[in-house]
Length: 271
Image (cartoon, rainbow, N blue to C red; front, top):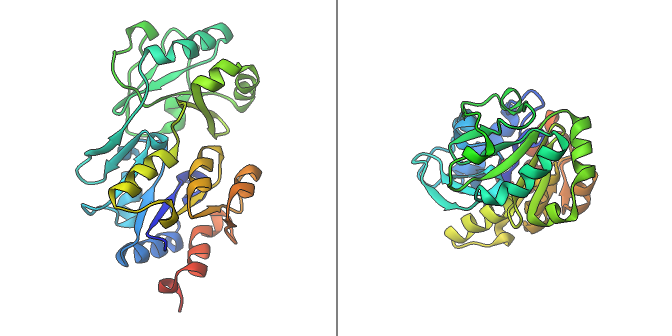
């Protein structure tokens, strides 16, 4: 029995213009009212998606969000962490050396702000993210010695293609590397993805992955798509995500594909 619905944002729940269609919002609000947990799963911090949470009515004491691609499970209203994990500054030393050798940009994120690494090429992450986060340019050796959620390289698709081609087996083993958008490559702890955070949240409620329906479109959604009792790929999703999924939405993200699929599955939404 599905008790929780997990949703990626970009090109999944969101239209290409970064809005939630009213059809998607109405279906999710109705299921949430009926007692099904609706959980947004994103690489962003919660403050950057607060408008979406309000639109969906996910503002009760029992509502949580998976942020930083699984590294932080946070209660929506109190902002208290249910689970948190990440990487140290030392863990990023091989990545910094790689970026230095190839003149790539790098941003390192903790759970409150972003540190564009000042001794590397200039990053485009702040312009791409367009979120209410603090950006503090900092030399790598001056980064604070505390827990970080991930690092990102934000640049042109062509440069990121070059990054992927140059990644060594050692780097691929040390980090979980995912391309969340054509212009953003993310470096997480080796065992970290959205499924990790969702597993922690399911356990909190006394459930397991058989109770989860998960929607996604891209590489960083593969973990939760594969783990979920019903993993659903978007019609506009990447081929490998569609191949891994149990089902595919009948419509794309720009055609309220989430609502179209939910209406097929849940009797609460049927006339």
